[in-house]
Image (cartoon, rainbow, N blue to C red; front, side, top):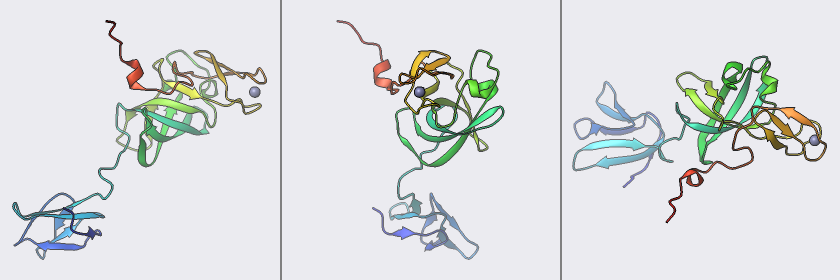
Length: 198
Ligand SMILES: [Zn+2]
């Protein structure tokens, strides 16, 4: 059971009484201090004191994860993406920036990044590296890419024409994108399971 909330560096116990556990450290004077903001737990049987995150473990993008994001800026050969949630829509604990480089946008050759993405596109992408921010993303596989986009002429939500093209149902405008196979279909792993016919 949690005893109380601790701030970083708060004294929790002395090393004669307890061992420093998760989220704590011992200083040179023999005090066990909190290393984070969280709830204090004292295990009186094993004599361990720990501090746990108040909201549980933070949820952050990891290498190999499929993530949902919004294109926030378009540069010469890359786009910046705000990574918002995992593919099931579970929100990450905070704001994470990703980039998709031209070479990672599509399996087929594209001349400029504008042929793959535009500002405010919703994208489904895979995390290539998570070591140093910003996260490197790829949309090369057919199931990845733009999953929702607005017409840059009239603002209507565009519909999928083929894997490289979107069509505006209102004004007839045609725009290039790296269109995901699941364009305007919310990714849901349950629907991907093969049905057993009885
Ligand atoms: Zn339009």
